[in-house]
Length: 157
Image 1 (cartoon, helix red, strand yellow):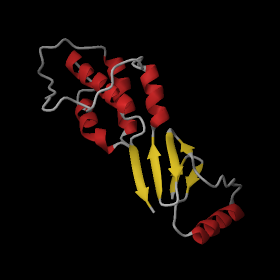
Image 2 (image 1 turned 180 degrees about the horizontal axis):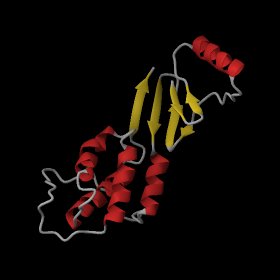
Image 3 (image 1 turned 135 degrees about the horizontal axis):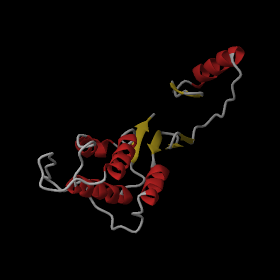
Image 4 (image 1 turned 60 degrees about the vertical axis):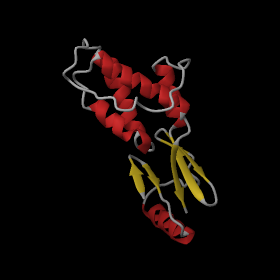
């Protein structure tokens, strides 16, 4: 069971248990059963007979539009192999507002994208003192996200 503000998601292999829980909640609270989940808080859910696919494709598309990189060339990886990020750089500092906005968006994407967790953690460490190098790595992440819009998690029943 997942509860977010006034939304409740119940997932189980036991349909009778779900119906019983919804019935019990309905006897105590005014609820509306929307049955099959398809979209919640930026997460798209596709339910098949054998699996559940969750991804944030629409969120990625909106992020690419917001950052004005829809025409950028896609990247095959989230960062360049062996790249080291450091505070001790000769690079001049960059505007932290855009950087913070990107890294915050990346952080939210880690809910369904374990493939970006490491680099997002690395970028997050420089949230308050980003340089142009950090911004370049963040922009590469946007290019990677462009090439992997539908990546997400598959959960087998």
